[in-house]
Length: 207
Image 1 (cartoon, rainbow, N blue to C red):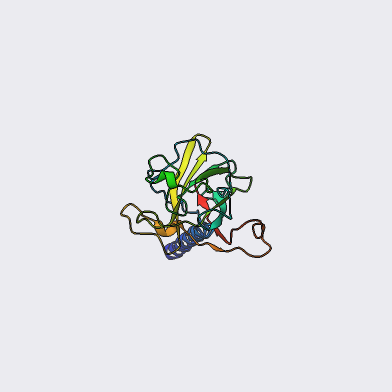
Image 2: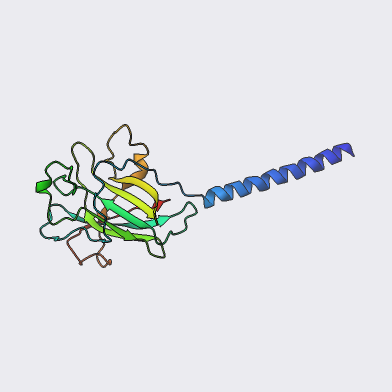
C-alpha cells in the first residue's frame, strides 16, 4: 500500500509539474513583448513646442536628402495597441544640421525640411511620418530621435538606427534592438506615387 500510495503521489506530482510546465511554455509562446530600450535624448530636442504634423518634408523636390516614410505601431507588452499616444520624432537634415539654436551652422539648415513633428496614434496604435532617410552626424551613425507620451507622461525616449549602422558609443546599449530596415515602397501601396519617397521603414514601439 505504501508503495502504491508513493507511486500515486509521484504520478500526481509529475502530472502537476507537467501541467505547470505546459502553462509556462504556453506563456512563453504567447510571450510578453520586450520593452523598447531607451536611449539618451541628446542635445537637440526641439526648444519650441513640437507641432502635430506627419509631414516633415516641406518640398520633396528641393529638400537635401531622400524622403522616407517611417511608420509602425505603439504596443504594450501584451501586444495590445496603444491608442492616443503622442509620438514625436526629430532628426538632422541631409547635411547633418538640426533645427536647434545650439546647433553649429544653424544658418545653413535646410529650409525645406521641418526637422521635427508629432502624431497621435490611432485606435490600432498606428503612427506614420514622412521624414528623411537618416544621415551620419558628426561621427555618430545615422539615427532618428523618438519620444512617446501618454498625456503628460513620458513613456519612452530612444533613437532608431539603420540596420547594420548602430555605432559603438559607450552609452548605446541594446542598439541591435533599435534597428530599422528601410525597404523600397511597393508599387500600389498607399504611399507609392504620392510623393518623392522611394523607401519606407517600419518600427513598433513597446511601452
